[in-house]
Amino acid sequence: MRCLLVIDRNGDLQEDNISNASPPPLSPLSNFKMLLMLIFTSAAIVSAHHEHPQQYKAIAKLTQPSGNDVHGNVTFTQLDDGKVHVQGVIVGLAPGHYGFHVHEKGDISGGCGTTGSHYNPHHKEHGHPNDENRHVGDLGNVVFDENRVSVLDYVESVICLTGEYSIVGRAVVLHEKADDFGRSDHPDSRKTGNAGGRVACGVIGIV
Ligand SMILES: [Cu+2]
Ligand SMILES: [Zn+2]
Image 1 (cartoon, rainbow, N blue to C red):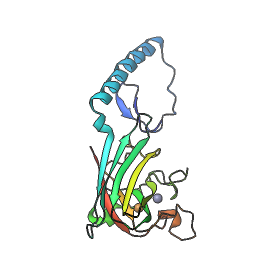
Image 2: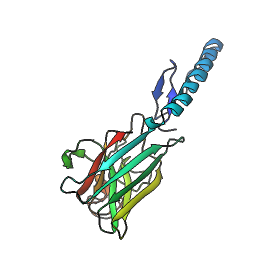
Image 3: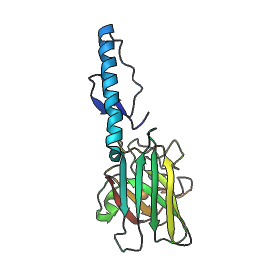
Image 4: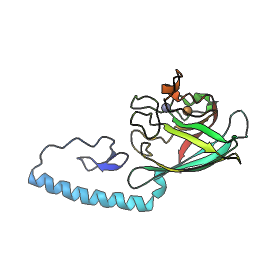
């Protein structure tokens, strides 16, 4: 399971994105200690969930460095299964599809240009959100309607708000063109989806 908290063999909480390793056999005594630790730490996790649900929520306020026509808020809420509910409203672009990604850096000191590339910790190619071969940051397109409004409301199964590959502290970027998901002949297609320049962006922060 990605993104979820697990317990290491010292009983400490740690983040685990690769939980396939099987532990060596344990003696009956250490088995019993392990069980006790599991019970206590599981209870701690459950109560932490109830007391601090905001720990698993993040928000990005999108702004346009070169103007203020385009703006919006996007929230990310981690669900119990580790998937992330993406919700938001962005206004200000003509009707159509526009590339929308998590970029690797939360640095907007130089506008959206200093947010780096698509967040890609697993060194894959650019793709569609449903592709196996995609950047973690590949959130596809957002769609603006005739009122220049885009409403986001979907569940994402690759991004995380906790752990080694958390998107918190990075940036979301809205582009000037549609993302082609790496499916066109353009040389940028499999790197960026050929979505063109960066229109608006915002740093993803903990709520
Ligand atoms: Cu992008
Ligand atoms: Zn990408």
